[in-house]
Length: 400
Image 1 (tube, rainbow, N blue to C red):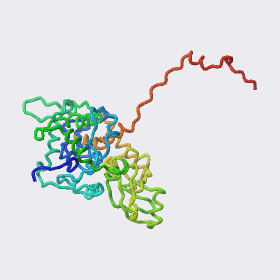
Image 2: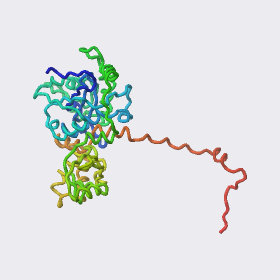
Image 3: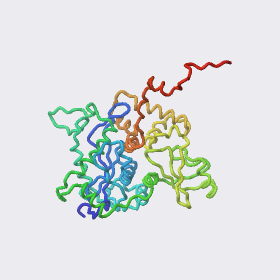
Image 4: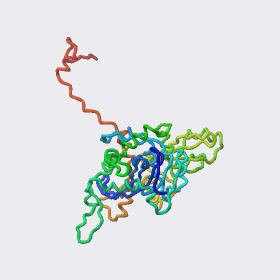
């Protein structure tokens, strides 16, 4: 096997991670967060980028599920707030997914995502990056991005090396938007010297000949298909996922049919812990169940919650206590986000993970945040006199 062969768009896609060679800063505090991790899904037929996910979580299930969700989703609303000259054509379910031997790719949770999407997984041999050359070539082209601030360079003897953490000046959200512009407006229009064609033209012509298999549901079903999953027990307290309680009246019909205690599958979005989905053991349909700690779980990601629990484990007097957990979250938030500067590189990495900065939140802000309304114009005296009755008195007298 010499590389990935594909006959049409989305016949085979390649997925991989890489740490980016730039240091970005937090949108809220202005402090350097470190090097983000990029996870991409790229089409093997045309070398066209299908989806990406940028975070500080490292190579894991959250990054892979986020990249797969971005690849199969329609992009119109997702990139509405980004100034693009061309449309992001990528949308649909791949027939085959080419992977390396990372632990996250062999996870039963990720394999269940592939089963939900109906995509076959092909694993390359160990230490054979040439078996997925398109994604490796895309990573090499990232060095052509003309961003000098915060760039990490290889250390050279007798040369003054600039500290990228002190030179960084690009916000994380702006960095994600610039990366999308590179993936949509720059990279697809570079001529492939082997095929003598542009990835944009190859992908567009291939879709006209062989349309992609689109996901037949709405965005809610796409989130459900790309969510993390785990078998859990439903009892009189609902469902508990790492100390977070879920469940209310929506679980009562299932408890009446299957007993007060039964085991079933649950799914959750790693970027939004405010709710999860519980599967009916017989009908196999999914029921959305909100978190009962609404204030704590709002805008909370899976990795943020794990870090908070790790920080609070030493101080919790009673496991799962809401008050202590909320207090620990505020202390950890003050510790990471209000500091003047990080003392060590390990502190900076933990702060970056706790910030919860991901490309999914940037896309959500672009598609869901409405534009502010224009300020109201002052009413002139001419308009007041125009709408006033002709014989009206200046003041109205009321006798009590």
